[in-house]
Length: 210
Image (tube, rainbow, N blue to C red; front, side):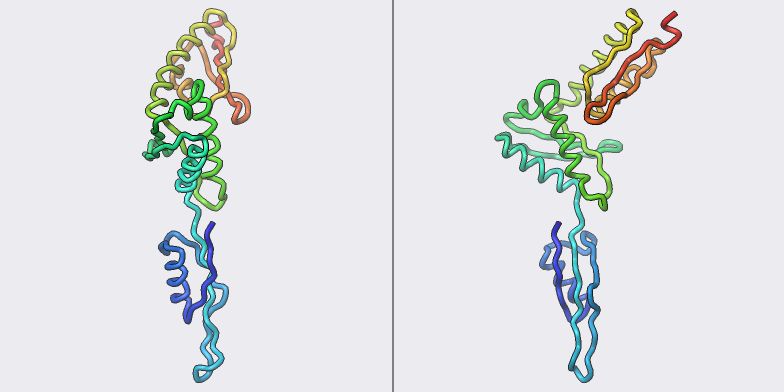
């Protein structure tokens, strides 16, 4: 987090000098007045104002900076675009070796997503942001696959009368399973476990056991 201490004849002058030094605007910083200016007698003995100006944490910028750094170190540089979807921000990754970042069943992408959210929300003073990582439309393809898997698993649970637990998956993927089976009266779904090992469990309803 960038911060500077600057003196000036007045608080306003000191703040203006700090903003110029930090190359930012007033709405992007927090200002603490360490000492107010004091006028001396006949121009003698006066004291300048001292302020400490701190640049506010930007969760999205922190997330993007982290992703650019880690993907570059992995040898998979990416282009990142962002879009807002309902209650979360989607960061779309694109590049030549994007399959490496997706990994088997999206495991690498999910791990990156978890770490990116930790980085973005590391400052408790900043507003919490929920970030979903996507890579060249992988999430849409994954959603369609999960919906098919949910229906198939629900049928299996109905016929065997035995519960079925999916592998651990992130919250956005668990939500797909819950929504896919929301109207199915033969089964019920719950999320169990602790992040990042939380998983969806499908169980037969009491009526379907008869």
